[in-house]
Length: 392
Image (tube, rainbow, N blue to C red):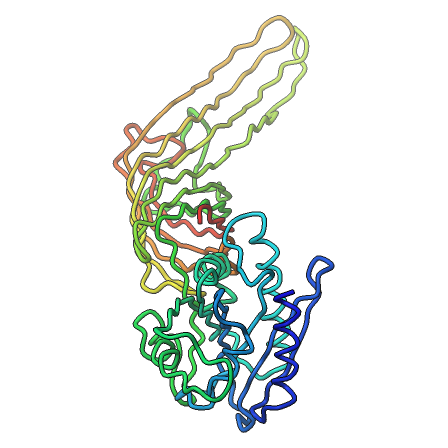
């Protein structure tokens, strides 16, 4: 009943006011949800920020819309959505219903009005405070920031009331001061705080062994590490702050098994065959720190790590015929200390998924005697992949 009365009051406001007010509705899970929208009539071609004001239990969207929003120093499109039962849901399962409503509201307004998608803000009152904060944290690609508003006195139900408190909140509040530019200045940075979140990244890339580390051909394992480039791996990072994270990492380079017949001859004792084979795996692993020079939609970063490179490589030859085979096979395991420095960039698609590309240079201690035709695990690594953020 309260929602029906709110919608009727908003319709009356649309008929009586001259300040560009309109009533809209969207269907969410077979439920028609409504919101009142007000915008300056003389905005021209300038893209305006979008402010979504979530009412509390003691203030209806109609009452809030009657405030003198034209007095804002920063002109804005302002939406006043109607909550079910006059309350916003912060916990499951009701949260998902209100979440879908707000997402469709934002998309609909961007489609129909000249709003700046990089400057969407939610102001919450009462139960809208918790909902606003949760929605903003889950959808950083849609909402720049969420703030709370607790007016000292209830807003008037009718007549103009200059929204000085909201104006001060939106324009000068430290949490959003730099997020809502005044005048025609606009920013496109995506503000997202990963502090306390764990990020899992899967990577594919290329390893290029340093030419300075190459030695004479390894005649025992018959392997040349510089000829193998493809690698894959993962890392798990935890953000200590917005710009600093720690991580553990591991890569895998597979030296696939290869068998090759070198000669095939007929002797007095039958067929005589000479063949060679090789195979193995190289696993660099370690831990490090990553520093983001900025954090938003596109976030460049620097990193350093230290650890070891485990190498297990085997190879050799075999010759003989029926009943008699001579084998010369060598298998070696090495675990050498290594460290890396590098740089990369993270491109965020949403609050949970991003694309990451990076490049690094690795150094290691000497491998004695040399293995796989190299005396150090040293070279350039280039990789890219997808990152998935966990935690709220």
